[in-house]
Image (tube, rainbow, N blue to C red; front, side, top):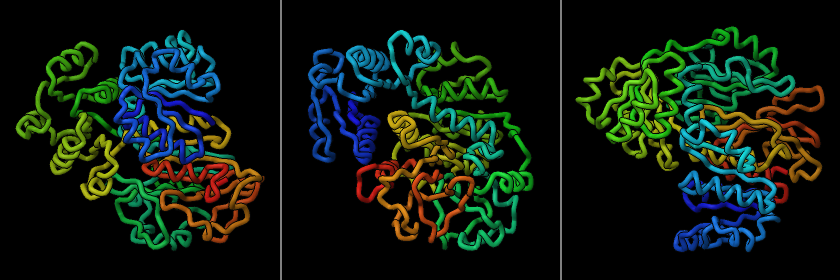
Length: 454
């Protein structure tokens, strides 16, 4: 597939790298020559140093022969215009990154008027994941992800005490014909291996046949249970803070936003209903104590600085706040986060990249997918005849640590796999992968890669 990406920032570069791992031909367009030179020295991508708003640039690369164009510049207006131009010039599909709330209020009108196929909003994407965690708590409590007879269940280990301190390889002794595909521990989603031990405060994601999963669900938590979320403090009044405050306020929570920029505070106070907006430095402990941070049900740190977000999240946790969520863009902080005791850390780039990749793929490979705590993705794919590793036991596939085969739907049969299980043609394969290593997932799904999934 031929894909053009306009904007060589962090998101554009990550999407380009991931698509290359999926064996797509990628052209990266940007006005910054030095940035393009640096990128081209690391990845095998065609670069064009030009302004894509000029239609002659789009014509010069043969945009009418491209399957997809993705715009990821820092300007919503630029992204919308370039996507519209490319569509008019014959590009098959176009996608624009749009972030401003004003645009989001009329997004369908913009899509229809400009002929844009897809619009993604990183801030809204991360907001939805935070909202699901805080307001619904059990995002998969009723086996929301289902494929035929297969369902996925999330629950806290403390609700099924027989599992505490149990090694993963002995899990089937307690819950036969089920498989732990992910563990949420200290704010980090991990894919477990045989010798890993289940801990008391872990949240487990378990796959099995639908009926046994529903029976287990009745034992571990109430159907459709909601939290008693009442008071939330959001540190940072940017776009993520804005979207989240609006959603939580509509949910019925009392929301406070702390924002350092006075002009931004005015915008927030005039555009949000029933939300308290405070002008101040969220790293100021005196301010946090005055605003009763200790009495909050949840604290979300969503400034534009990872270090501040982590520091404020740690402070909130030390003050006994039950649910603490941090917005963190640097993947290198993942290990630090897991040791800090934060309940959830979300990377907007990972979430947005995953969304874009699935839109580019369409339904050719991935029949359905769903995010898990904004850090992992469970997908259903079909095994085709050109699959490179058909009839090979899973134990011999040397799968990346970031991927696990959760279940196989073969005709009317449901298979919870073990090391001896082999994938066959036309199997519907349920797999879980970490968003932090989405490149490995694309290699895994690559049709032509000799080490890939297909």
